[in-house]
Image 1 (cartoon, rainbow, N blue to C red):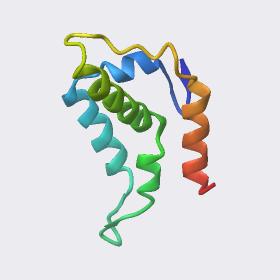
Image 2: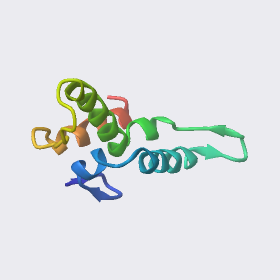
Image 3: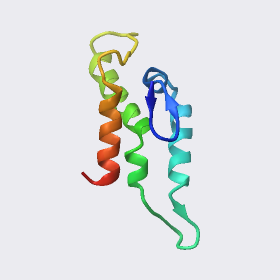
Image 4: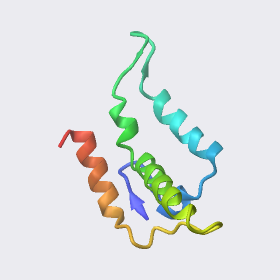
Length: 96
């Protein structure tokens, strides 16, 4: 489980979300960055630095890498340290 400051979630659950559910998360994150008064997006780094988006990206890379070797294999985040995703998220969000 990973605590991102706003929500606790399981990386395995995030990796196993279907495409529709992933898109809902992304649309929600992006919609929060829209400023109606200025009619533009702001702070899009809040989207790509979100731990859920990083988990989606990591899962996509691993599935693509492993998927071409073994059909029907399940992705499990046993070997990834949730603190690494949290640290990467923090660093991206703060520009470090």
